Length: 298
Image (cartoon, rainbow, N blue to C red):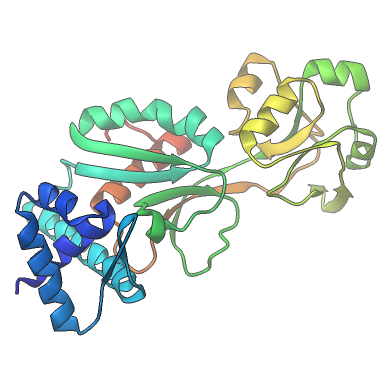
């Protein structure tokens, strides 16, 4: 039995949910797919798939085999690319995960240029402010900001950005501008539910911490931006989040004499396997764009 073909067949069956769909992708007959899976189960002495009304689903052993087999196939593809010197001509599909607002403002506008340099490449962008399971979702690279919750993650820091307190001129004209962190207690603040509502500031070695409150909590940065732009209050965020509005004057920073801890942008790769050439090159592309060192090469 061809072990590579067996792994490829099992991966296609799990991902498509049927023998017939896998057969079409592999350009073979359905009996060949069924025979390969039967031989693989016989060799391993375990059941890999369960038939249900929803199609074929992997058993616990099948899921473990699928995850390892998919990784092995990806690494085999990367080995071939490396041997051929094909790293400069990326191909296939690159799955990227990123927070919605950050991707909309800073990543998606860059994609036309990246794709222009790699005409055989496709990019699948998963927009989610939450931390997702990269292996389970089949993600090649995730762009994350802030502290990494998983210390075992394979990560590369791409850039460091400032953080500020933001409000619209209209809101400040109506309520007044805070002059010290303690003044925030008198303001309506928009709370990002994925972060703490205790904000800590530094100035000349002094530390000031304040617990803010507000009537609106949002779970995604898009909601945070929309609420600030609707003059509902002030909030804390990365300078990247409000970059267009800072440039136009639609939003301004307050408490600029006080400093907030900076925020890091990371490229995170799935644990347990080598980062693909596509993912590494995309990380370098984003790093260049965010740090101003982008030279026009993708």
